[in-house]
Image (cartoon, rainbow, N blue to C red; front, side, top):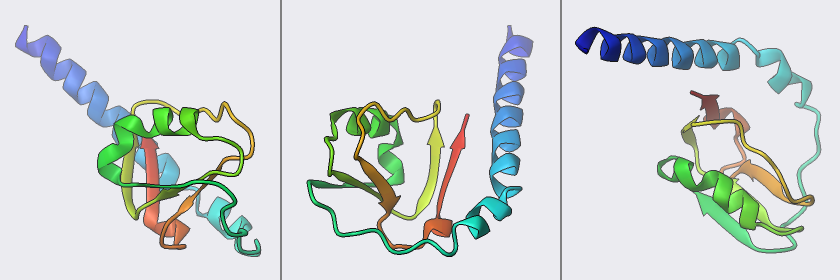
Length: 107
């Protein structure tokens, strides 16, 4: 029984480490967006989210309406699965404006 639990823990750790390596190995994607202009001010509601709220992030996105802005505080967001945007016109951005300070991994 302990061996099975250890295998699951090791598999989870490897999956998380692999996801983190993939995120860190893609600096070219961040540089590709360097020339982007600043986003306009939010037209709708602004919802501030911290890494501690990662479990609620999909629900927050689901409740957002066109024009709303979800602002992610700096930190590491270990997502249980990929986020799905079900509503168009919702903006997801870094609260500080430093997108390199917001890291997401899917475990």
